[in-house]
Length: 287
Image 1 (cartoon, one colour):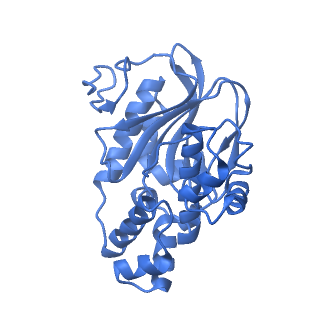
Image 2 (cartoon, helix red, strand yellow):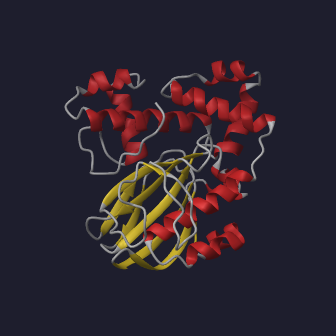
């Protein structure tokens, strides 16, 4: 379903699937929602997402190896928002907890690995395990922050965020180095994190040392850390789809050497074990 131009915001972005989301001041759903954005380059942008807590709490965010451009705001009723402020979340190697009240809302764009920093003009490694907020995020966005800060509703904010990211992605050109690392990312994801670093370096025609250096520069994380995150996210999706699956079987299916190895990585990345998972949003990633 495509979105027609909104006469109030002038936005002609297409979002799929988004039933009953044609005009502003629609109530924001509680929980995590994710959408594919037809108007944005799918090679660069993975998803538009929104999150509204069911209750005031500290909310756990799991590492995914991506950079997100998001807006945090207060919901003031009937889809209207106040105090919108930008956040640029860097690639993380471990979960973070984000405090949020029951009237807090988030809308974000998730870039594919290796693209967020390039689009935003930032060092991916420089924002590893951190986030730019308020003044720092505004400085990174420059004049593009102004429409986002003055959005009056959740739908208007989504629309302006899409238009902002379209401007950022339209500026992109790809170097040979960047293209090689994006290919490496795709190979790691398609293999479920199993592809060895040596085989990957041979496939793209560079040394292991160069692969480590360039991967960290483009993605922001060491290649082995990214592979661990790919395995972890795949295992989390499998557990979400098949909650009663035998953990030993899951470990082998997802590329761990054994169940103990999987448990160690779950503790390291998520702060929990496979048998004692908290209620956290499960994002849709390539697999």
